[in-house]
Image 1 (tube, rainbow, N blue to C red):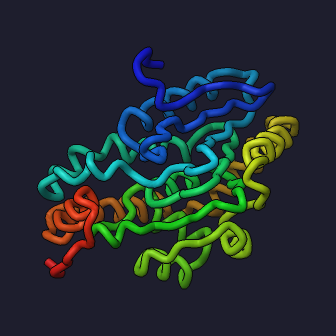
Image 2: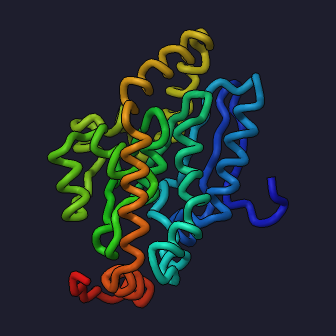
Length: 262
């Protein structure tokens, strides 16, 4: 791992590897260095036979408040978006294709790319203060890291449409009722509970865990790759619109956007 800025903290508790997002001033916005370091840490745990499950965690205030909009706002069109972002967006896919079970420990905001990162994990433990949403529509784009596909599979068409078309957010209890998360716990114990949950999977028969996980993912993801490919084409295309320029510029300038449908 890079010896520079540590945007991911890496640790282990027995058979559970822990990757903690570490950009507190930016509410763990998912920029390139953070996602690069997350994948490096994940691959190190995959290669370590002592690690049988991986927890991806944020802070109490934010799991991840989304992608780093400043990185995206300068992209001039869909072609530039594709060439610039393909490798970055593939890092969410890399998390989803981890060879070991993954648990997202979510407290506070899990928005945009943050929710997509949680959805890329196998299971989600949420604190009572967790807030889930895909608000990309407010800045003139749609999710580009699997959100339209994984969210629909998690909460169903009706709620996915509501969240994606109106930027509707879910609180922790509602997310639990919809099946988006596995459990909700007090904020002060969300990471402890995620670690305990992960250890249960780590302590089970490894080959059986692997087989069960592969079977579930096969049932869930049939056709997913095609869906994500279509999502990505749509996502990139929106970078050629005036509304994307206005939405991201307004976000950076901290004002309300004025969309024209162009």
